[in-house]
Image (cartoon, rainbow, N blue to C red; front, side, top):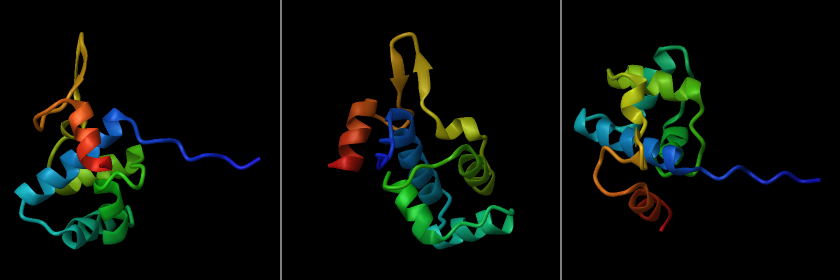
Length: 104
């Protein structure tokens, strides 16, 4: 029985957008950020980072923590803010807007 890949949900989509936004704010290329992650002991290629930012690759917790450290931020900064009404993006728009922008 073949398994289906698990779809990336709203928190993963938000994290993908957050990684890219913060990376660009810091003036880093994908290659530079991937190299920082690799230097921190978590091997990562720029292709893997690109796929993560485009929500084509799941970002596991070890990747998220390393990417956050490489960006000089707390891992929580890459996660959506949760309110009593559900998740809210820190980067403008609803998480549905984020999903639409990333997945087309």
